[in-house]
Image (cartoon, rainbow, N blue to C red; front, side, top):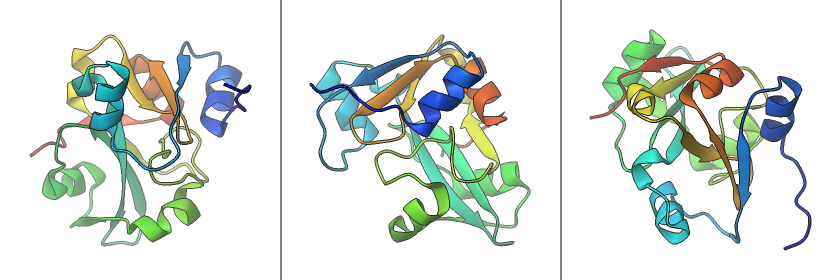
Length: 158
């Protein structure tokens, strides 16, 4: 495979000297976190997806949870201090985050949106998140993820 360019997420982790590893794999179109984990022989429970939402107030939020789980929108709204939240339409992901669907990570978005990591992440020494583009993963501890994103943990699952 040709030399891969660094993503904004990788640059931020390096600048902050936060421990992480990067994995590149072949991927040319959106594939969900569970299928990527299965394809690469990884634990799907350890692979986390980023779901962007917009609150009733109009503010944006990043919710990061196991790829195998479904988000409870009421719990997400409560964590964000909103009356309600809705998933951001796919067509708006790039404009809001700077990342495309399938390559979206809470690390290094266009703006510093509030980030909420599902508390199940704390069960693992290391979690896997998107690296900021298709075919890129970042492995890091939940504590490092929270430091990199200035995030908080919350119960987000149904």
